[in-house]
Image (cartoon, rainbow, N blue to C red):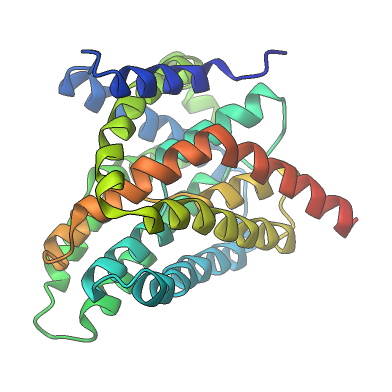
Length: 315
């Protein structure tokens, strides 16, 4: 077996091309199409598996995951505010990014486990959808407190009707209603081509990540340290929660990956509306310039090893 999953090499190609300023950017329409395919594929797979599960059995796990989504930004905020000496709005915005999730990181983790033939609970996309939202609410509260002037209705619309939530939730519902047999006619597009689509998506993400590295040089060492340390701490928390919830090794690794990832789609849009004074360059430099590459290249294997270690200790 090769040392690297080929899809990681696509990310490295994009990263190297971006640093070298090569003209390799995908047309925006193609990037949008790849994003739509990835989100729907993840949602459909989760929905098909959800159709096999009794909802009552999943409810305690869902509530525990939402609680984790609330605790992560609360833990990140004081570090950003006092150790990083960031303004309140910037600290709250970055904390919200790190309490939410990265669909791209999750997709790579799924491909990583499939490449190594590690089984996991297929309903994990439900957790992916759940973790998109709590951190945004917490981030707004941290930035503004309880303020009647906060545009909650506009922010809720931006989050709930944003592309990532609509496609993930829509895919979940379609997969759940159609079931394993009903989804067969579209499997070739959404399931069989998944890794090829993900490879092209990561090529573009490598280029985008390279573009954020200039901001890191301007904003100092703190965001680099935070962008590596926060996912490690959050990943350990996610792995521990996965074990307590009775997930498999693969499921535990995926939940750790979700906890360790940082949003770069839903949260930036919501923060732009609700906390416009926050500097988006800071949050995107940390999440896309540091945490995303770290998770793709080193974090996901670490979370898998951590999941195996926890399960061995727990018997």
